[in-house]
Image (tube, rainbow, N blue to C red):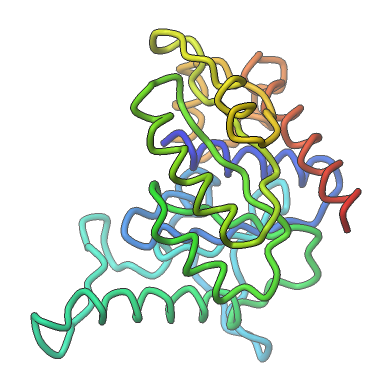
Length: 240
């Protein structure tokens, strides 16, 4: 839940700051944005310009595979022509699904579209191939050496897309034995955007579909997320 919670709250914080924001849930097999942002179960409206995404109380437009699946326990499945072709077929279908989400959704005029990727490195290259120009990527880690090992690979892949790396965020600070996320950022040559202290209330807010930066702005975790969103906004505005 770490990277998705950061995505949901960064998008909400940007909206609270006056930006027009959309969120695309690119985690097709484990979609969570609709739940975290409180739009799960909303019916999608078809307009002449495409599918109108549901919006949160803060005005964030959301598109997620979760809005299309019939039941909670229904997995996303792709029927390949043969078992031998299953892996290639699945990758092509997932890329097509993301392309349709981007092109067929009536996003309207946006200042930012936040794309929440699944863990790991695979989906970033796909998104970079179908989005004409990525303004930047934000890397999320947790205070764990195992997470740092995986994140180093993600930083390498992100750099290869050619899009700027806006920085590294550490979520759940204080939950595990301390690791130095700022040192990780420095060693890989990317900015360190800040740490989000572990707060069980943040997870409970996500379960309720209530973005933490909106419902509990005075909590330390919400303040950290709002500050990180401000840093992201300043960077994007300065490079626009």
